[in-house]
Length: 400
Image 1: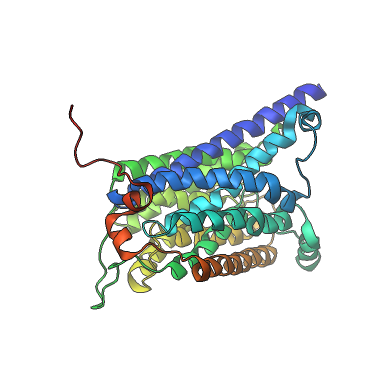
Image 2: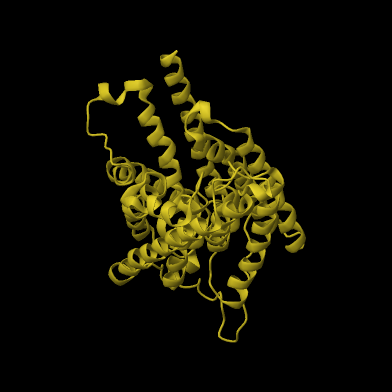
């Protein structure tokens, strides 16, 4: 029976890892559909290469920073218990690699290729796993201190703060330090529109992310005996809440409609194991409204050229999700309890502050040493030709 349990747990978390791995295709196609045609190849290449760099760095360094273990041992030891620790690494890697995938959407269309890969290595190797270890592995006694001070630990079941808020708040200084796309904001105060190149690809990316998210959330239980149907239904309710709010407030704009469910799913991650489904619906609806309002404000009023709106979507909705877990997870609102708003505020604020600091340091140093931005000529030609020497759709076919 023990062998059967070990095998079932290994399979369970492996399937979760595969589902979250598939989400990276969603990141790729969401970015591909949102950017202009001349930057589509770059969107696809960045996500795959960022994931590959993340894998190596997290395997060698990052996983050890977060969990105090390493893989510099024999294969016989690694294969123990059906290789559960290895597939657990795989599952948690897909979370870590989501950070550069999130950032990629914010800095799209004008960022240099190699500096971003260096940033990926720094973020996945140390910045992300440092906070991951605090939130999910009791590092430095921070969770014990929060519990002693508030009565409960900081709760983030599937990463509203640990993954999404951290990714979104790292992206904010990256976007600001990089600067806007050339001619995006004109000297006369006008905002130049850069419409999405492909709504079908944008929608495909959103749908891939939506489906994979049920692995992201449900499989965060990490063992089969802890699986919860409540997590699945709460994820569903938050997703539709975000969709419907984005539909109404976004005035039927397809970009908002397809990012609305993602906003809801980002927000519900933290408390998906605690909330009542009606609470999850409200959390998702608030997140959808938050995304539409803040995306419009940052793009048009504050002139922050965050191409995919990753700071509103992941940074702000993830922050809201961390706080919302303390509100709607309470028994007084139909939740299971064991959380409180003060603990959630402290943990969420720590994640945001650490992410901001990490983003400023990494991207600030890269800007000073290597530069972050393509030249005006390279950006005019597009990242596809400037970096990869090929376009997504050649202007003409060679005939023989």
